[in-house]
Image (tube, rainbow, N blue to C red):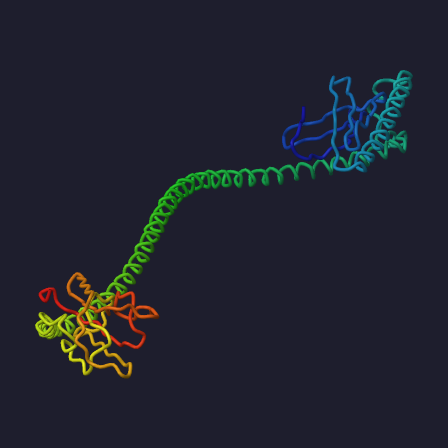
Length: 360
């Protein structure tokens, strides 16, 4: 299990009183590593940045992780060097034990420092210097621990502030979510309102188009009304002439009432045609006064011939009369404008006379 969540200082320490080497690491007031190095210990690299060793005395396997492979290599080399120094110290301790058996206990205990220095080997001197360095490093580590504790406290306070800010932000998020939901509902309502207004605008446009069509229709009807008024005005003007025409028709009817078949003097001919005249129905409205027939053949004179055939036809409102000769012309000619007579002389000009029904 991990002994520390942050980087710590690991140092080699020489214990003079016990004549042993230790690997020590502290985190504040907590001792993380306190392992005595023995000659039979082995440091094993388990990965590029991690190594471990087993301490049989503490019945513990210690592992260290490094930031780089180079640091791991340096630590392994130092471990090998300290292990060798521990072996030498053990051997020397054994030699001293054998030598001390030939001397008294007092001389061995009360010996001067000069004698100890004379018997000290270069390895012991090196280890003492390393021990001093480790003490300095341990002091620096303790100072760093205090510094890190202050930084940790600062981080905790900052974390508390950030937690408070996060909670406030979460509350703000919930508030903004509610506001967003309200705005979304309002947006949907406005969108529906816009669709209704667009539908109303479309209906208004359709009504405007219908109104435009009705205006055009009204203009057309007004134009037709004006035309009808003009036509009515013309008809009224014509109706003013009708009494005069009726009086003229009555006058002509009186003249033709009895003398229709009595001779050419009925219609005031200047000379007698070569055949008797009788009036019959004329097709088409030609004139409203009299039928005038004039023979233009030279040598024809007045005669007292009487008609042999008379045909009188009646239309819906007037009588129209046309005459036929006793003898059929040698060369028949088509009926000219205004008569139903199948035959007429080639050089006879005539005009239809309209006679009212009272003259029949």
